[in-house]
Length: 309
Image (cartoon, rainbow, N blue to C red; front, top):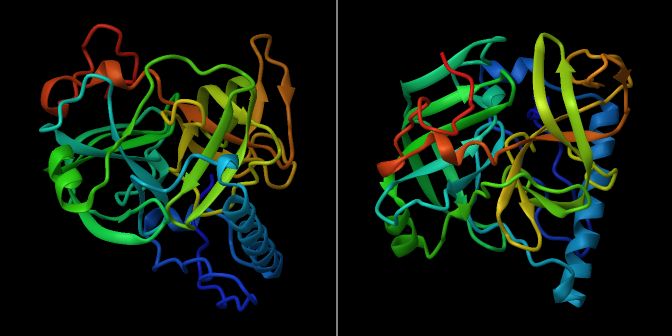
């Protein structure tokens, strides 16, 4: 799972660079199920920071290179996320935040487990276009969460889309309701690290197996999206439409076969493929059909295929 780094990293002093990547707050139950911090992880984080700085300079010199920014993304205590709305959402509907099921503060749902309408007071740091934290949003419940077939958590907030827009000037990201296509240029926008990863959809994994969990029709990135711990829950944004098409969640770190942090692809004939260093996301086009008026979850709605409790 693309979970948080489980301990503090030394601040990075890079000449000419901006602020170093944020250090994680003490992680909750989910934190024990991620990558541990060792020398290799620390060095990797330094390299990622240098790469991120270079990308920022390139975007400054060539503004047309990257249209996607951080507006509407959020930082969690241990993961990334985004304020999302659906094509039919109304401005006065309660706002929603999306992250991963394995980022839930209540712990990771087991295989087959679905969390619905559970009280929550979790807070989220709202980011503007440049990645600066401009406010704090609060949930009143976990509307939906699971790691079965997909890896998603949807929180309902105590405020509306229009109130967020009025107070902070930030609009929610719209979630596409159609299946994305292979080759689509995408950006994985991490609110935790304040970093944008740019690549393409390489294809789709019929089944992605990781430990006891199985995800369906997962998005496979091209190698340029080398996401790290803390990017879990980041929105995957179509660069052409600026709509959310998936939620970032995992990658094969060590080349192992179908283990935690080393998912494997399983095709329709049962053949297993391991792609070390390749990362994945879970599609979100099926989610809008499950939410109706006032952002209310309705798992019995026509077209809703999300797993039920």
